[in-house]
Image (cartoon, rainbow, N blue to C red):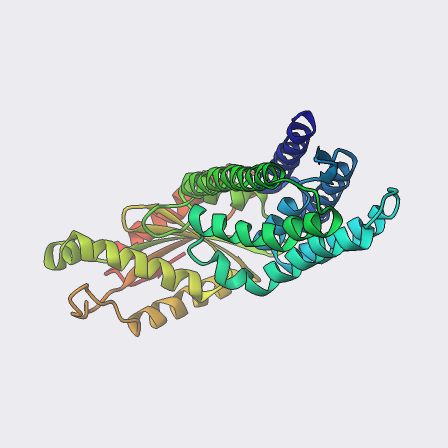
Length: 348
């Protein structure tokens, strides 16, 4: 029982190390290749540790090495599975013992290859029941076969204990992995919505200002404030849901026009930072945007086309010596002049 608990403790410790690894990756502290290499090494070292703490039942030694190997391939494919397989194959010969080739073949190679082959179908709508039946099959083609070949005196009790410990460990590992994955996904969503506007998916004003301050360039930086013309009329005519649809579609249109930094200022107002060689280039790019917008279709949920969607634009050069909001306020004043001059205008 102590050896079995030691095996399970190694599995949990592996999971905690990998969970911490992906938490660092989530925080952008480590590059992806470092995370991948570290993940491979953690699993390989964990399986080697399992070699050193086998469980003895009726004189037959076994461990839970198959579980982390199968789960690794299940989640990450052959790119992770093959390097781990090579490492642990080489490391296994450092430990004395009989039937080395037999156990490597049945407990590692065959389960790994089988999982690689069925991985795509298996991961679709994966459930605990589906995984349970899969690990039953894995147990039969690995530990059950090896035990039968090595020892003819193994009792039914021994088989039952190995089967139960194998299945429980696999399902508990899957539970912890699923829980950790969901927590990371929720954290990613929370971070996204903390930095982005929920309706349009664009950067919110706070994130836009932060990224604009951080971005360095030798080109001239220009802040553009954009306001959809007569947006209240669109809401009154087509309804607020279709008004939101227009905002979302305009945000997508705006993002596709260039590689500039785009954010939502609030309401029907948007903010853009351009890098240009001159003020004339900034002005011309905004005029081109207006011309492209005049050809863009905006459709309601009922399929009706919303006519004459246009935008007024105010521009201001970004002054590096003053707070960024100073330039934003100047661009906002130019936007006011553009709307005052008849809308669908660009004012610098």
